Amino acid sequence: MAEIIVKNKLNLIKWLSSDHVILLQHVQVNQLIPTAQYRELMDMTGKDRVVIKLLDIILGKGENVCRDFLDLLKNDDVNEFYPELREWIKTVDTKETATMTGQSGTKVNSKISASGGSVVYSPIITDTSQGSIEMHMTVAPSGRIDQKPDRDCEHRPIQDYQKFLKKNLSLLVQNVKNIDPIIDDLDLHDESVTNMRAKPTDQDKMRKLLTCVNCESIAKDLFNALCKHEKHLMNELLNSY
Image 1: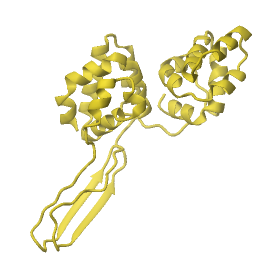
Image 2: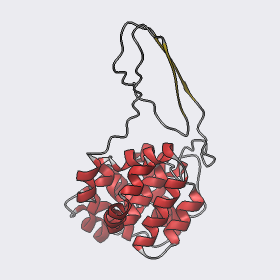
Image 3: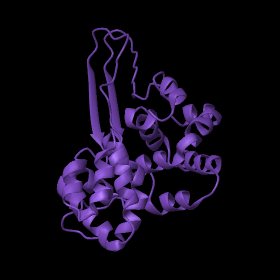
């Protein structure tokens, strides 16, 4: 998997640099990099430099994380922002395939393991005859040191609500679906509410709503409303924050 990234690195830099912020949100949510590295990348200037640094980090983590990264790029929520990437990633096979060939009647033993959060797919075995095959598959504990226990957003307040919303702006805009009841729960000016509801899509409404967050009290109210109506999404964001 690392070889695929290296061979296509220049194209990946070109494609992903068009909107690296959204990519970083998905990388953070999927815990491919530690929070410290995520924040370092968010603070960097220059789109190309950010993507180059991210790819180098992914490559440095080995085959399992490289595979996880390529699988992430297959996600429609990610590649919809990068048309050329979307076409290319369809041609990339990230499944692990074990091919074993033995003489007729030969017993073949195979051990397959996965670590670092990877998944072992059903191996494909070709050119077998009458010999028996034994396969022992084990999954090792994830080696990531930055994993955190699940946090329930309704019971785990954070210190800076405005910062949380700003860091996760792109993911909130793209993924919040229950926007109308969230607006109902907030104490906003009638004119602002009218302008939000006039927007044609949930994404536009959420983007407009986030522009109204100009103080910590409103940010906290919005955070609580999101926890109430988008609990699953907020738990995912909070667990990686």
